[in-house]
Image (cartoon, rainbow, N blue to C red; front, side, top):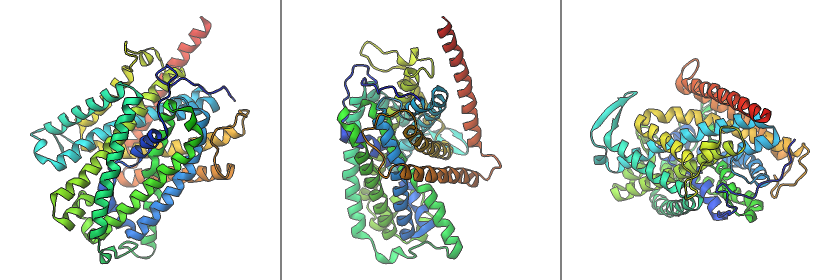
Length: 473
């Protein structure tokens, strides 16, 4: 096993690590709390009721903590850009690193496209007049000129911010995260004040007996995915100050506990505003629950602004991470790195930013039909990454890498084994959800993953031939 020392040079190549504990928290928390809750909270309540949903998210947060400890240990041991792909190369070698890195590229390209669609959707809900005329239809959904232009404009803004470097992206993340927390406190406060206890019935959903228990486990199996943004910390650590390595565990705990508190409050507020039976008819349950309770557009817009800020923080964080995964693969020799690592005269990234920007534009042009497939693909990739990181943490401890990590998993190998078991269950849950949601014998999302895997293998073989020629030369 490779026990080479960790690097001290960040992805800017100048040795300056600028991100502190707050920025690491902002990237991870911002990537965790997006905008999915605005649509899905109604489904959570219908499946398990307010009490059942609250219990499911509390357990999901604990599951995320168990897995997250392994992330924190490996990130503190290998604090360089690339995250999981660096763990893979140091512990398992280049072939595994390429497979992990290729999966990460798919994940982040998909997610930035998802955010481009979602941001346009939320702004359209706030200002329907901005959507403009219909340009064409995809999968039965109309694509409007205004939505495309909004996607383009926000994509350019995110790309330019990240083009200017980690400090610029960090400042934007700080601003968006603080705004999100303040606005969340405002509308949650209003919601709690207007809640009525009678709306909480039934506490554990409308179904009874075995059906109620089955619905609860369907929700429980998906809840850790709503905490998955904490993994973003493995990409940001390559830009972090060295004194933050040993604090990764505490930062991660703060991220997951904050996210757990947010989800629990959202469940309580939405459940208290309207009876659960009415939520089934709402397209945007969180928004329409406030509209039904207050009848004030101003309050409704506060909720939409919160969702918009959530989507923007996820978008900025995933764009940031995608750039670093591409650079990590290039710097580790997993792909042809000349064009990826080339900098302009200001030492700014060019090719990785353009690739991520193009993914945003694909999302904006295809629109909402892209959302569900992305969720399914991303969910499976994330759960596989959870499983890999836990296994990698266990293998490293048993390898010849005797250097202690600045942060170590509390509870040792027992906790790591727990993370492996939970991750396996999540992989099975993701596959079950993918098959059950589509009703197809072989879901189209799996064709996407298989096609991407074949392309990755071709890229890997070409790279192997190139490396062999370099050694021979």
